[in-house]
Length: 384
Image 1 (cartoon, rainbow, N blue to C red):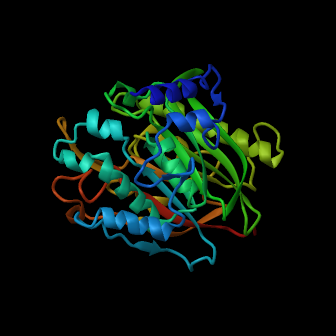
Image 2 (cartoon, rainbow, N blue to C red):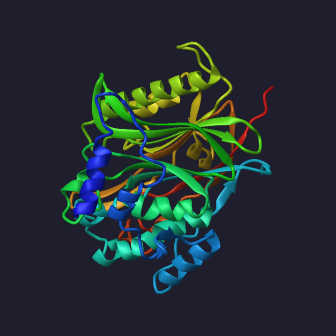
């Protein structure tokens, strides 16, 4: 890691303490950080000392399509509409974008050509996917190009955001890395006003872990209603089911406290006025304890992607599909949870077929990550 990235990482890690609530990083880089962080020249051009990114989504999407013109087209996916469309739906995207350092260094996607993992093209695939659906709320995991790419580029399109790096990111073990990976939460400032934000280091049995979450309290500009949004990435790998369960319980506890704070309710009460949206790579299949904790939570949560099934009770067959030296993995690990009594799912983006994904699975020249994006349209339910 270069000197600038090292100094930036050192500054970030100083925010971590024994407390599970972490001080927020600045919403924009100070001059020294800006000097230490090389903004992506593919998107941000320095004009008189001020970085300028593409001014609108149409221009940036054109730029992405031009950069990818000689590659296979992205997957064709359609929205499944479940209700009469709300005039102002809230579009939410959940996506583990695959940290660049992990994709090139540690994850060993044996059927993926090395060229397909090159950042010079992956960055266009990632941004093209985001721009294709233009979510109002964007929740990302494994972000290791926040300061040089995603924050400045998406800020130029009207998004505000916060980023929380992992305390001990595996990206730092990869030569030539771009700093630690973590979770990032973006929201469209034309649709929402930020009321509160916090970065959380998740705990298990009162012991801080390496997993984090970003939580925001947002107020909808058109309705005046509030929604509490969280993004997280729980512990990976088999054998850590107990830890994921504890981390999930800790996140639910934090969210209940945040909602109570803004409802003005007493500790232990469940607020019925502020809905929750919780996005994440839970690294947990639907039979795991952490899934059961969410589905049976007194917060009244349900998983939006169950709506794709005929009976509305089953998760998709897969949200990730990859081939590693240990074998092929096709399973569901990613979720968008929502308060079912206060929010309505109006539309869900369908999943690409096995034929679309192809025999070499993910990532590929067509798709930037080993995880598929989840996209849903929500609307506020009227009180009865």
